[in-house]
Image 1 (cartoon, rainbow, N blue to C red):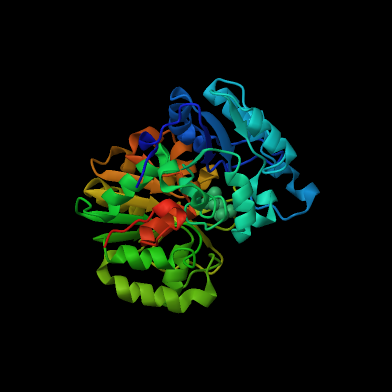
Image 2: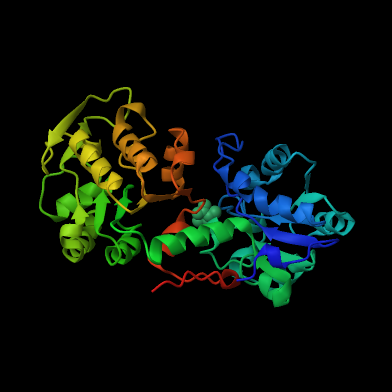
Length: 396
Ligand code: 3PG
């Protein structure tokens, strides 16, 4: 794969596809700028080598209704980038329209412009070649540094780079770094390899669990998906969340995984998921009382998982162990995060919520890698190919 080290940016305008699809507050402010910070090495490299930057990203999932889509305009993202990169950042009011064209035409060495949300254009989702030509026409070369979007075949990811000759397109440092760690995880991971899978739904993780079962020595389960697995085994799960239409899949995965799959041996339960009304207690064993909701892994499970993580050679973690955003339900996720941070293993965390938890606990610097990918990280772990720029995770 060609990287930005191979491109000459001097006097050139580079169209950089970034993933600035950042979490926002209800009012539309940037609430977590991790993805913007993660793109900085690529952006400063291009500027330091005499280039100018035209940045393109999506933000959210616009519907086409201008009022509802207003929070998805890129203005606040551009403002945050300007603070982080320490130089002025222009913002175009469209993606390929007159404002973008004028601003890109006038762009000089060392200058930066952020185009309007690429998903405001119907051509983006459709991979429309005309739209791709217009976007590519704004710049001399193309860089993909949008790891979080690499699993999408949208125009700015696939059709746009195809508009450039091979020598004028490359992957950026973030994509390179993410692929390197995925190589480490899936190529020849240091044994024993452990996966920690949490989150609400089994249905989101079927493919990745199936694939990981071929690689790992242990797969530790947490989060609300625990209760779909326990129900599939015939246990009482009280009022816990459960995907009743996925019990067969859960049973199949349990059969496939055999002894590799570890389910919680105790649970933190509550009568209300509202943290203010929560009365929590710990239930041992796989059966929950009829009026209780499983909300986090219990202390014995957390201690056991921590032990397994500390003894591993490689650990990959996706999905919180409980409803960690509320203090009373945080401990299981915190214990796992602390074990990841203090383990001598290669430790990788992926997925929006899990990365957020690790950040919130102040442990992001202590794990080997926090991926900027959510769906992209899971699909890469699953071994799926990406069509963007030959960014293909190909490890047997
Ligand atoms: C993500 O946050 O996973 C990426 O930015 C992709 O966003 P999407 O799921 O809306 O395509």
